Length: 190
Length: 61
Image 1 (spheres, each protein chain N blue to C red):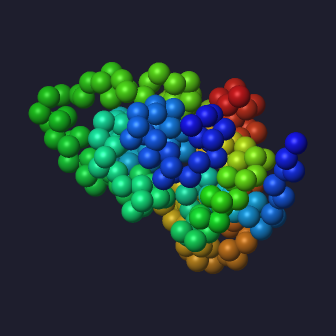
Image 2 (tube, rainbow over the protein chains, first blue to last red):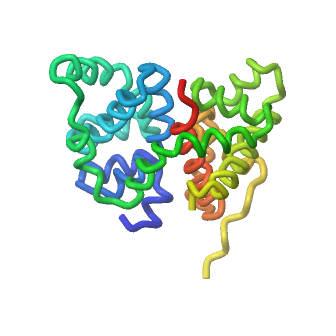
């Protein structure tokens, strides 16, 4: 699978070639899903380091045991639900047993690709992101936070905020575009 | 040279929610099909996802 094919491929197809040992397919899945996955993990675990470990664990698990993932049954690869509950216990358990987990091990499999390094690199940009978030309108920020950190669909966000769905849709999109511009200004994104 | 896939404003409007994984399954499937054909929309999704990924590094909560 070539670069453009990977970028255009649905999740299920990527998962299938991960089974065949395609690291770059794993990197593509990572760049698509690691962010939302981390947001959810942080919501569940309320411990940032632990949440990052859980996310690494999920993708490492997909790499090591791809046969356990059935892309035909779930072509959408809902990573977030796929792992959080299952990994919570193992991650916490390991920590209790042996102190902090060895993060070098966690990163070992997928680390070789630049996509992945860039995705992981964004984890350390908290302050710049906070400033960028402050640039958004309150409506944009609220819609994005409910969808992203709250895990709601935009329709649910519209119900929660008692706004038309179209308004929420466009606030999420414009807010993310504005966030991107602000992050470029901050030198976080290219 | 191939004709570029046509833009669809209705689906473009969903790209932000798509990047946040905040669509209903049927809508997500439609956007999947759309961005598989439309390179501009795919690039926008990549950019929005990058912003979304940064978001996870943001507020401590």
